[in-house]
Amino acid sequence: MLKTKPASRYRFRDVCHEDFPLLAQWLSEPHVARWWGEASTELGSIEEAMTSEETRPMIVELDGKPIGYLQSYDPHLEEGHPYQDQPKGTLGIDISIGIPELTDKGHGAAIIRQFTSELFADGAKRIVIDPDPENLRAIRAYEKAGFRYVDTRTSIYGPAHFMALDAPGETDLP
Image (cartoon, rainbow, N blue to C red; front, side, top):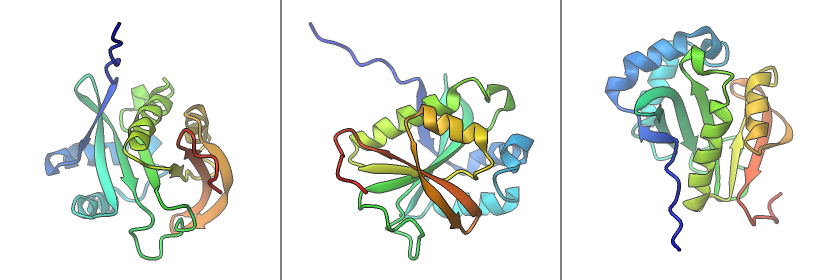
């Protein structure tokens, strides 16, 4: 008997310019603004990333409705990136749920589990994420998604609670 793969709950699509008003709104929400920079600066970075090799900015959709922002990046493609000490095949991710009413409902961990599963299926060996050490909500979500604490680092954004999740079967990674 054939087993059918369950439908994915979330859809990830590339950011387009039409998303910028919504992104600006999300970046201004207190639960997002606390952890991200000034909205206009962040929008400039997202626009830059839309044509970069190292970063892929995406919108997370639930039932066809945009609910969050997600990006993945390859630290080995960005000159001088502080995470180049990670093994080749490592990707970093960042996520924000834009709609306040959808926070604290398990979406963060579920989105990350689905997205990392897709990244591993595409060949990633390790996924890293670096929340602010004071962002306990995010840290809990990442732990629920399987991430483990590696160390505390300082990035260009300040202190980072550096976490990693290794692909199934990858046991030799530092």
